[in-house]
Length: 372
Image 1 (cartoon, rainbow, N blue to C red):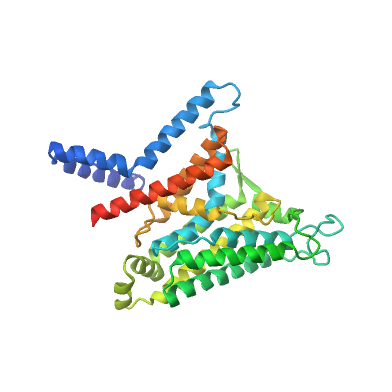
Image 2 (image 1 turned 90 degrees about the vertical axis):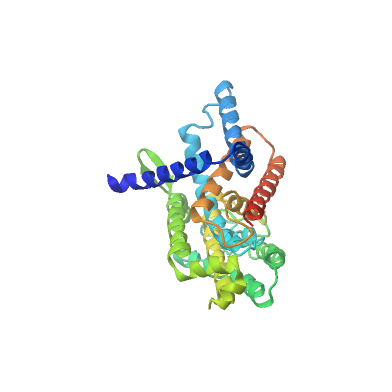
């Protein structure tokens, strides 16, 4: 029982410490404190207001079969968050290095197309099979292949960033364009003729979308894959020498180099690890979507970046937690689903997501300048 209560005792102790510090302030400082609190938590306040509004709308409108905060809706949000977490985990490490990755969505998209094209049903069952004379290889082999290809692309990005001191924005923008060209070339190969790649094998779909029932709730396998990925990344970030080196390079690469950290190796490894996560995400998304075309992965990196900055991963470098990334992913999915419930157009959703990224980065920079 003590072990279960220990985290709550620590939380209570921190809250009491903050309360004592607040009580010691004079009236002017207390007013400034509340102003800073509202500004620093503006996104969360807007999110709470949005959730309350959507819940009221769904409660009072008879056309909605369930409410926004119903159990079914919450489970749906968790599923969407699980599928989006792989990309965010990869992008998060690059943001810790004060960079970003504009190629993440296209790397995932290429992995989606390769996975789908290799794991289609036999030509006798699906005449639009991309490679009609090729039998579907073992699923594990396909996973390793797309992860290896994505890892190589990540190493390519990391090498140019580390070796030539190029900004990740420029490097990954160039990679994004090159990958789009590769995707268009790949889509025109074989028997496909540029049509969407569908007709996936039942085994492939089962590996990704098969369910395990827990407390009468059917949970897809990819949710458990996401949990494993989160646990592995938490361990890497917090319990390994590489994780410490990553934070050190992100905070101050010159100081890290003087301290004996191999800055180039660390940067390349962060991008390679991100590539592996993008590749696995592509494998998952191909089966989850079912029909994959040249737009696969388009703008997916925007959601990943938004989730990271909402979750407190700072563009100033050296700051960020896995728990924050996952929190950001969940919050972003809540916003996305809420907008869908309100029947907001997809075009307008892009505008709102862009505004969220801008607001989150502005708040993050304000916190940085205040501390400085």
